[in-house]
Image 1 (cartoon, rainbow, N blue to C red):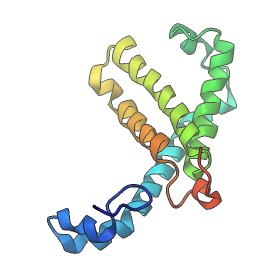
Image 2: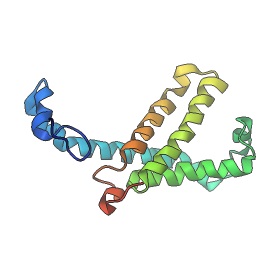
Image 3: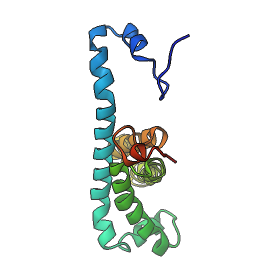
Amino acid sequence: MVAKTQDQRPAPADAAKGLVVPALGPVYRRMTPLMEALLRILAGLLLAVHGSGKIFDPFAMVAMVESLGFQPGEFWSPLLAITEFFGGLLIAFGFLTRPAALAGALVLAVTVYFHGMVMDEGLTGMEKSLLWMMILLFFSMRGATAYGIDARLRRQV
C-alpha cells in the first residue's frame, strides 16, 4: 500500500520513485506549494484588476450582459463587477477560495462563450478566458493551499 499525504499525493519517499531524475523530488516537494500559491495570487490579482474598472462603474456593462441574455442587466452588471473585483481579491488572499474561484470560473465560462460563439473569434478569441477559467476551476477544487488565509484558519468551504 502506498502511503498518501494529507492532500492525497504520494508520500515523499514514494513520490521520487517515479521521477526520471529522482534527485529533483525534494525540489518539487518544496516548490509545489509555493508555485500553487503564486499561481492563485496572480490569477486572483489579475481578476481583480480586470474587474476594477467595472467596480467604479458597476452599471457600465448593463447593455452587454443583457445582450447575452442576462436580464435584468441592472442586477447582473454589478454582480459581474463584484465577482471579478472582490472575488479576485478573495482568491488572491486565499480566503473563501473555493466559492470565489468557482464564481470567477462561471464568469469566465460566459466570456469563453462570448468570445468563441457570439463574437465568432474561435479559439484565438477565447484562449485566455479558457485558460484562466481552468486555473480558477483548479482552485475551486484545490482550495487556498498552504499560503492562504483559509489554510491558516484551518477551514475551507
